Length: 340
Image (cartoon, rainbow, N blue to C red; front, side, top):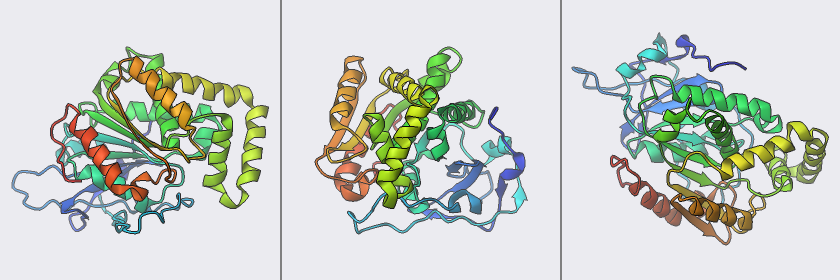
């Protein structure tokens, strides 16, 4: 795949378009397929109105069905739609309209996440004076881990670009997004000196509904996400695939698990999970949390007896947001606004 391409013609602005997020405006820029940057415009002297544009492709790509969301009926309306933009602008010149010191939320969404569902998390962090770099995972990044490693390296190189290289980083990874972030960690672990700056800039990491346990948990996750009606068939097919291509799949998954257990980033962490999640073995999760604590990592967790995979915020909004707010307030960056 090579290094991350940064097509300059892809970044455009339009003075006639803007979007409100709880009273604030933001700009959406599609950096490449699967990665979108959302930021609050940096005021320019003499310019009283910031009118950023949207890249309509950034948030309207068709996605598979997301996890059920009927636990929480108060479903906020999505603000993920984007307006078409027209005037070319260089990616490297984005510092003219966006602060390069504002904290950055690196958001790894779950597989098949719908734009409206992801928008709730995005808006939550935008409201906390953070810009958001949304990373979507492809099933092929998981089924062929070498491609996932290539994708992880592209994300890492992006974080080292001038637009992001000075920013403190908070990570929020949901479900398979935790796997994608682990592919970033693998490169940091392999080159601790080369990528030390990125590792040191991470001030905290949040893990929501990680797929934890055996290969069977992974296979179940694929079935429920890709083709729910054929869950059993997909599960057994996936297990056969893992067995046939063990050296290229299962062996690399085990390596990724070891990387995550010995995470090179030791910033404070927060875990959300539930006892009834078929994709997450709660015993293994608690063992992981204990391991990190023994390594000196400050770890907080919120476990529910019953919930829905990648939908804890919808099922338990008050408890979820209170735990997240408490965690954010404990981090070294003091600019987060307590407005959840």
